[in-house]
Image (tube, rainbow, N blue to C red; front, top):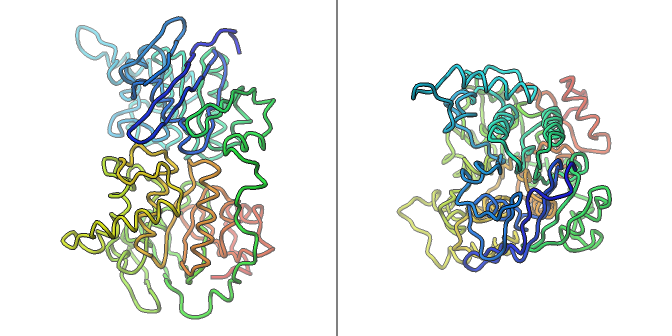
Amino acid sequence: MTDSRPVLTMTGISKSFPGVRALHDVDFRLFPGEVHALMGENGAGKSTLIKVLTGVYGIDEGVIILGDEQVAFSGPMQAAGAGVSTVYQEVNLCPNLSVAENIFIGREPRRFGAVHWAEVRRRARALLTRLDLDIDVTAPVASYSLAVQQMVAIARAIDVRAQVLILDEPTSSLDAGEVEQLFRIMRQLRDEGIAILFVTHFLDQVYRIADRITVLRNGTLVGEYPTAELPQLALVEKMIGKDLDVLERIEEQPRPELATLEEGTPFVEVSQLSRRGAVAPFSLTIHAGEVVGLAGLLGSGRTEVARLFFGADRADHGDVAVSGEPASLRNPVQAINQGIGFCSENRRAEGIIPDLTVRENMILAMQAARGWLRRIPRRRQDELVDKYIKALSIRPANPDMPVRNLSGGNQQKVLLARWLITEPRLLILDEPTRGIDIGAKAEIQKLVVQLSDGGMAVLFISAELEEVLRLSHKIAVMRDREMVAHLVNDDTVDADRVMQTIATGTQREEANQ
């Protein structure tokens, strides 16, 4: 740290919503020239603390000091003007505008009353050069990868002379190389004296980049620690409030053998299914009670496969059979009617409806399957919603709260509940644990095992290879939008073998469909 005085001090911060105490008497400090990780389970209060700081929410009690002045921002724009800039997990850019336009939107340099476009482009190039990013600033930002869009958002944030840069889950959609690029930029900005507030659920990343850690639990402050003095095991225990050895874990009991699961007719069988420009022809069978993992790098075609199974995208070619009978999966309604549910990786754009309540979001798929003229009776709604709020430990347990007020992990549980209510025979889970805390992740992993043991088929997608290996009976490996191998997840399969298959695209002789 380059300065002994904090650039930001938050003291005694409290914030409540109807029926929920989100923060209670929380203190937080941020120093110039440091990366400070804000840690806690979903619902711990991390997002609320950031929104209180940036003026999205007003505070009930407490004081915020920025530099030497007490502040109370009316919104993120005023916060940014004072030097507090935020880059969110879902990058908040205008996809139809150019890179340069996105960086300077609302702050365009002008000459003679008109936008000075040459200056906009020059300054955009200079900013991106500072971040070691060489791209065409006149191209639409949507034409670049999510990693590049993250860098554009950071460039916009630091151009407002940020003293404080808040990065909220910036690595959740990045691959290993892109994470390294982001970390290099974070270190550069830290060395320039910028204070960085870093929110992530990846513990290994915290120990690679953070100088200090503040832990929240259930809206209260657990403590502030130098990273070097807080072992990873101790951090997890502080986050969850109990020792790891008493945590409920996925039971290490023998699971059904694949040969046993594959007896009889598959629930769903696709042959040479393909979509031009999205995924090459592939074949795959999934049996009742079977967890099939999709492994591959970002952009390898995993999500494209999932969308074809659910009819969210229409296949150009191939055959589908459900329970041994020819079937059509040309749209989601047909898939739902066949007993297929789909939790998308993009819960913001394709999952939750933020202005609806938890209850309304949960019953949405079941109501759609019944038709809008056959309303689900309120008593039945209450029974179902109460059942899954308890089963999935959704917090706060208020079915009438707008779902936008829940943390990301609890929103993910609401989406799971939406599909579990329909009692699907095949549940497609695309990155169900991305961006959620270690406790919620363990709960969802345990749920997948329970659903499988209960006879439900699961198509499971995760960028975390260890998670795929832990849960799957069989692994389909994707590479360059092609399914290159099917591996039985037995004692011969480990992360190195799967990564070698991803790298080489080699089909193993012992591959099993």
